[in-house]
Length: 317
Picture (tube, rainbow, N blue to C red):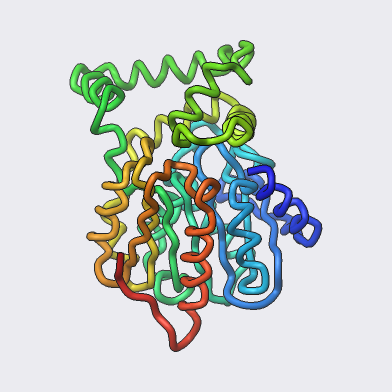
């Protein structure tokens, strides 16, 4: 991860900030552009990280595309706003604002990891007319269209709270406790490193990779994390998947992903149909864009090249 981040910092000297991009509620969004030629590729990062997460892919696209990175609200250098706006639905509207600002007329390829992929699906529901016109390709990595908590202990607890009618009270209590909990010395702990390793990586991840990921994730304020976490529990954008059938799509799954298991990606693939292609990465976990970035980089470059006029990508394995 260190090498990848150094590559992004070098590229960062050539980045051009895009001032004045705001969500529909006035929240400022941090947006940057690199490059001037080729299709515009907009990167949407996942929950608890920021645009630096895409370091290897940004480097891989140098010379191939006009690259746009942005920090989701509450993450990185973007603003926050009302807690009630910490939802996947809002990130879809924020993405629309970014696209309007950076590519009002040029073709756009959308790239999303985890919650970033969900933002793309939310945009597909909100702006279906853009897909096949303004949006000409999508690259979905380790993401889900819904039902993230239907399995395992968390899923059982969530369903039990819903059936008992106490889920709103539980979520409300978490919202109230988050600002106080944020003051406690919980960052940089061994327990946190264990959780990051288990959730994002496989057992063979280096200590530096885990520590770097922990540092980025723990910069997110707990109230922001709680708000988005509650939204992810009810996330369901499965109805938007047919919209993506209008464009070439690559779905990347990691076979050892504990947060968005590979089956979620397979369901996305099946719902989109023949315009989607599967890239399966064996022995990789949720942070596949970092640990196995060569595979991800190659698939992304192929998609970006393929969406140019006269070339399309089809379904495969």
